[in-house]
Amino acid sequence: MPQLFYGFILAVAVAFAAYRAHSLSRSGALAAALEGTIIFGLGGWQWAVILLIFFVSSSLLSRLFSKRKSKLNEKFDKGSQRDAGQVLANGGIAALFAGLHFFLPTAFWPWLAFTASLAAVNADTWATELGVLNPTPPRLITTGQVVEKGTSGGISLGGTLAALAGAGLVAACAQLVKPVSGFLLIFSLTTLAGLLGALFDSYLGATIQAIYTCPSCIKETERHPFHTCGTSTTLLRGFKWLNNDIVNIGCALTGALLGFAILWLVP
Image 1 (cartoon, rainbow, N blue to C red):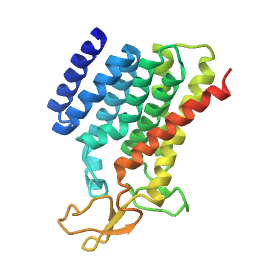
Image 2 (cartoon, rainbow, N blue to C red):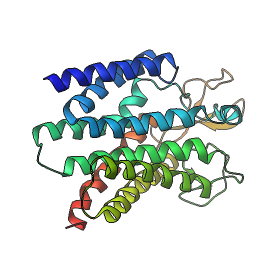
Image 3 (cartoon, one colour):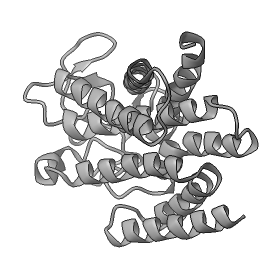
Image 4 (cartoon, one colour):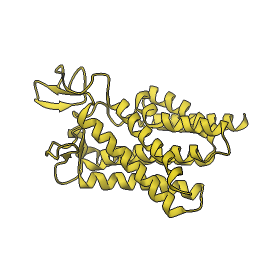
């Protein structure tokens, strides 16, 4: 109970600071406080560090080169100020495994799934924030067709390297705060799980995620029901219920499942 109380205090403090810094909306701050309480309070300080690594690095990248990225805002469903949906989509799976750790304190697999989940969402965030700065246009992950920057499902060399770095950062920090034998192997496999989770996110974006079109601007967008120009958007492909938040859950879950699979690969 004391740890849960201290976790609540720390989570509220971080969420409030992020809200004041305009990194979180009001709903996002409330969701972050709840999520952080579970991870900080039920997991412990090592789990809290990994969550903070993801949150701080992704928030900083959202602000980096913001002027150069502002023209792509019409592509994305939401801005850099995360709401409750984004917070829960990125960290909800991680919070689930932190909760499982509380009931299974001697099991190691919740930690692996937790770190791989955050490695995946960090990889996806880094790829999105830095990939749009790639000098050449991305290609659709399914067909290789050249598409506009910011297009869902588009990947580039720069974005893929950014995803690899984002996953590697989480994997390295996990080994630093909670070292285990076979450092290099665990680090490599966790990084790979994170990268594959991010690539799966791109695959969903290129196939079944809800993508709309603006009849006025003749542009693809995730925004619905209105584009940034104010025109009503119409469904171009995918399922209406499968928005970017659900795709992010798929990314996090894929990373977690691959992290869990590490147990069968490493003695």
